[in-house]
Image (cartoon, rainbow, N blue to C red; front, side, top):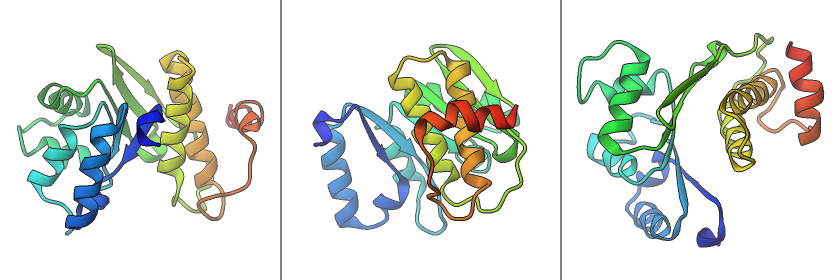
Length: 185
């Protein structure tokens, strides 16, 4: 199944146990496009462990708290763009996206930088919003949508999920573009 999937999404939490880490790396051998949603949770990561995951990924999703922590291992860079470029160059990561909560996101791919300011919503529950953001991003990337459209869609779905109770509210994908994004305009 992994070798047939367009994307294989994995995170650092799967690497905290020897058995799941070994299984993860066996699956990564079969994966096409490897998407790392880092999700650092102390004390369940080490620098060496994170590096081994970064070396595997084609797409990295990281948040604005995790980025300076990891980039800080390799340099004293203060700007988000510089930190993203550092990781992208050091680990040969094709695409990196940094989420910034209510302040949107920044995407670097194909040598270009794109950003979206995010959507202001009444936040009820942030659980699941990052996963929804990543799912929306991958959906649009799989459709070869322009980067700006991709970020708007991903930020919109992430904001929508954050504005709902619970991580998995009911919605239809077609409604995201018509109702959800229009509602945030």
